[in-house]
Length: 168
Image 1 (cartoon, rainbow, N blue to C red):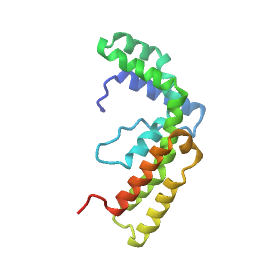
Image 2: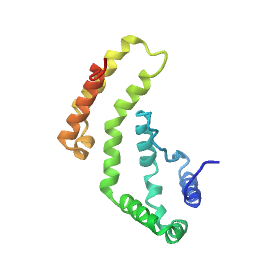
Image 3: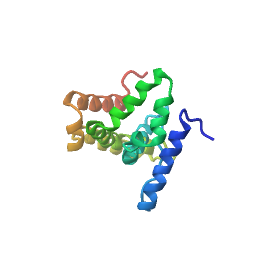
């Protein structure tokens, strides 16, 4: 059994997934993921899990279980409930998740592929080139989400990592 802070909310989330799947047999049953501290590639998985479940997350605050959890939580935790409500009711938050997904996808897929034991050495340079070009020419969704200085930081980080900046 997993350790959840609010097991009733987790069960409510799973029920909402079941209802969605009953209405659409192709609907995702992916749960929400946490980002491990040591695995950058999983950042994309975490973001995708939120994007795929956005329709459920926006429903959660209106459920009786959520209202009960919020009403009966410790006073110091009430702000977290209100922050969650503010985040899921904001279209700009959803747009930021979509933009982050679009920006991270090529980087994370490339890193994940290159972490494999059987990755041919001759694919390293072409994969870097594609990732670097992708960062230099982001799609409109990314450009609309992040400002030019943030986008340049991504380009610089990719180049620094490729060139091994700061490593012996």
